[in-house]
Image: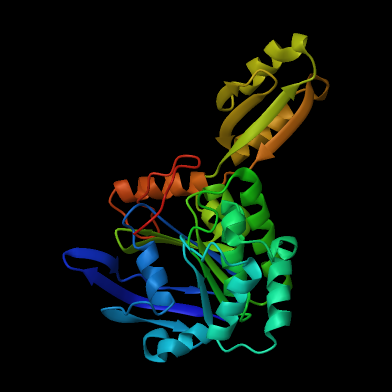
Amino acid sequence: MQITITDVHKRYGDVVALDGPTFEIPSGSTFGVLGTNGAGKTTLFELLVGHDSPDAGRIEVGGIDVEQAGHRVRERVAFLPEHAGFPPAMTGREVLDVHARIRGLGARTERIDDALETVGLADAADRAVEGYSNGMGRRLGLASALLAEPPVLVLDEPTAGLDPRGVATFHEIIERIDRETDATVVLSSHVLSEVERLCDAVAVLEDGQLRAVGAVDELRAAGDGRVTVAVRPANERDRSRVLETIQRYGEVTDSGGEFAVACGREAALELSGALEADLVDRFEVREPGLEAAFHEALAGTESGSSEGAVDDEVVGETEVSAR
């Protein structure tokens, strides 16, 4: 189900939370929303799920104005907030049963079983929530959102605070939803590698304004055209000869086992032909990720151009969140 955000404005007193972002989220996609603190991401989510109304502009889900739809928006959009709490004495199954009854869902037993299976909590369904780990609690929250089989699923920082195993499990669940359903998934994250793995496209907000939007691959291509070439010498005695050659083509970093050369794509092709095959055990060209694209967009913002730019301070997995 397509989501259309058109010139949306929202102010809280003297604070401008959203200042006219306009973009579309394609039906059936997994879409990421990024932004620094105060960028407007959470405000956007609150408007998208009908928890608040915009001062101006329009948000549509499947052609329906969210503001006009009122409670009916819940039939189309399920929301997993960053902090979702449940009564500790209740079991996971009881929590889901309450949620299903509140929503007036039929075939509750089947829906609950399916949701528990999807998020990997079938074996823990009859345990008290107070015994759940943080990751299990997040998965229970996702199960409650999935009960109504929503066409749109909005996840606010779904992996925040999870350990690496919990993050990996949550990634697998989201990828399974993407593969096996037609749901449109909208999520926020402060980890660029996570967005790169899960999302088809991304929007970046800063100070309530849209700085960049597009397919992940397109944002990568919009960078400065630089790649990283990894070169591993065939043996120790050839290291100096390899280093002498690759230094002509770009900035070299020596990690001990291999060299990394930062250069343009044309230089990478020239480098591959300049190295003698018997001197090299491994040669790999690595494309830039979202981080490089964001840095390039940031440079555009600092030079005075805001169109398609990212006013951000993303470094590796530096946290970028929003109101």
